[in-house]
Image (cartoon, rainbow, N blue to C red):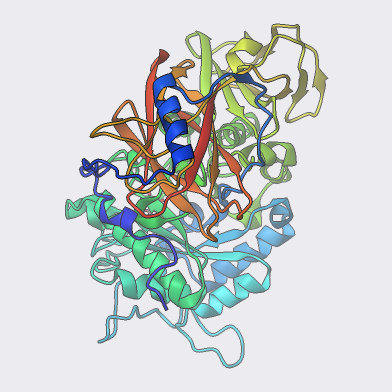
Length: 575
Ligand code: GLA
């Protein structure tokens, strides 16, 4: 069995400081006569071909992983979590209608393991907290609870730390426990999690932080351990990184260690656990804290192709927020394309909270197939914000009119700010389903203090500009247009930027059966690793990203692959 089914070479150069490895040698293409003539013509003409085209033209959108939806034990149970709690919560996910609405993960957070290992280094689990649940099962075997969760048609998540100690060295409740981390045991532990049957793993950073480790290096190693575990067991663990945004994970987490999909925390916890009947049971979640996590989670240039910023599990339904604030919270997570991991006690949800959590028109926005994050497109006065998330349907946007001031205000959204052409689009209130009417240019409504209106807008896309890869002679030569990306970058020059964030459509081919990866650098700075799902042999496929281009038409975009082979990039189009 191979050690991984994904290319591991990404991980080799994934260190925070290392960035993309540049290859300085000249290419030696063996061009046949026809190709040579074409290549010379292309080199002389600059851009291969460009022009306005309708945004909806082109090949089918490639399938990208959606943000995970589920529940985590941390916020309502802290380290009191055990088998009984998890079974109750899993049953409640089904009976509350959440499973039907799309929630699937039951995630066990810190507290399931107290840091003990046997002589072979295997994790030892308390048999009383995790007993046998069916005849023939062994107490202390975590596959018991996984079987129970799977039996309800749900998926199971587990938790560890990248360092030697986990966060249980700073307990929220009860005594301190040390050594509850995976450092020194990455291959062993992630293989164990996959063998137990888990589908998801959250990897915290308390130990890594204390030891001053480099998270980009550690998480790359963990990504490789997860891929290796999948190659051995056939079982994939969804990768959730949790270093609270301390080391700008949005700049290195996409694709880290060859992970084909992942989420990374962008901030600290919205609230510390509120466990009924225990110390701190009177804690409250705050609306201001939730808003602050939303703000810190906005990194649209990193959210693409199955990689998502994670502003923390939701506090929706926990003590502290009003019903209107819960609705705003849900709207913000949905427009951000955030993971929807619920922290409340599912067995005690009010009908109003259940309704908010399962609102299909809002969940659809979060789970949109394009996998992009909202961008703040206007703030006409301080605290009056207009957020727009481009959706996969051509001309469709989810729009949030957010009033962060202390009084009722009128907020107007201009279609031009959404990159839509002037012409009255269809406008629907995402929560009430009401059809609304705007003008050819805009729509305005009043929004109560601290409240938001979420709209679904379907209009006509503004035209896009298309570019082909450029062939360059000399030492910094690029990949031949139409060639599979190998050591030399595919370069797109003189690309026009549109505002702070430019939406980019990539047409590409990947005839393989797993994702291929390419690193994108804009104007020789920063980088993000893009996952290119298989397109089949007939290709091409299409996907969307957003990038920070400079204004004007002088942007250089370079796609490169340290791995051989990467995808073939046919064209990019900007809007
Ligand atoms: C960190 C994480 C939380 C939770 C706790 C467990 O604080 O951010 O989400 O996992 O650790 O201790």
